[in-house]
Image (cartoon, rainbow, N blue to C red):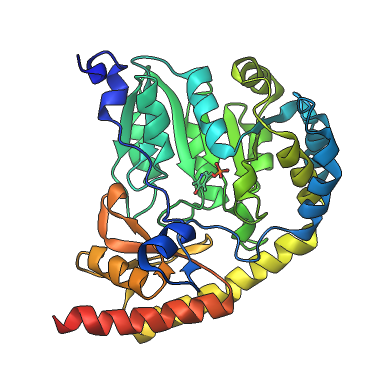
Length: 369
Ligand SMILES: *Cc1c(COP(=O)(O)O)cnc(C)c1O
């Protein structure tokens, strides 16, 4: 028998998530070292010292279950953002939270709305619960919120919006989001995925916790994998009205966040210096990427994230492969329906220099054919 025949209907249309290529894998394949990975929007500054210390302090406690309620981390988050701890839900990475939202609010036949070229986890979690996913065609690679409104129906349970979006880096302003939320019924949950918000400038940043005071159907999702540098530990948090947080807490697995992740997250929540340094490097280096692209006549999507997506106007797979041979890992995004683009995470200055040099070499080679 074929087990796919007995799997949930939605699972049949899924394919496994394609992660960025690990450095060790390329080392094994090519027998080279000195590899630069700019493929998963990870933090180029490495694991923060404040978190290392927090982990050392936890080592003797690992025989116990973690605090199932994440009391101290919720206190730290609440204090930092002037919100209440009972508004917070912790996740094993924010991907865990995205799945939790789907499980809590949508079921078979319910409609879930998200944008074309939006984060691939939205269709993944929607299809897995046999929901009907409605992908709204993108406008200039970003969310067409007017298009979202035309697809709302009495079956709509959930809307996913990534801001800034991954893999395109598009950004919606607070005014645009506010105007949209004003037109959505309170009975539809709107998830605002802000995995990259720390990279936006303070003056342009969306005051999403302010929006939450106006719109009780809003859930804000945040990650500690990007600006905070904790990708390997898997920790994120959601902020919502307390009633929604209570519902999420019923569905959440009891010990979804481990002790090391909790302790590290508390440490980095109080480590503004680290995040400021990371965001500053990102701004300076993003400007260099834009200059580089302009100089070499490469089209790119202007990005508010810690990555930039370049349009090569021809299949990008050979360019990706050639970059690998130069020891540079970037991210192909054909799985998003963008086969001519590559997404490049912004690294440290010397990593970016290596990418620039490798790309110049590779473009010469691949064009010559
Ligand atoms: C990276 C990313 C996430 C989540 O990452 P976690 O590591 O699971 O916290 C969520 N949303 C978007 C848009 C992302 O790019």
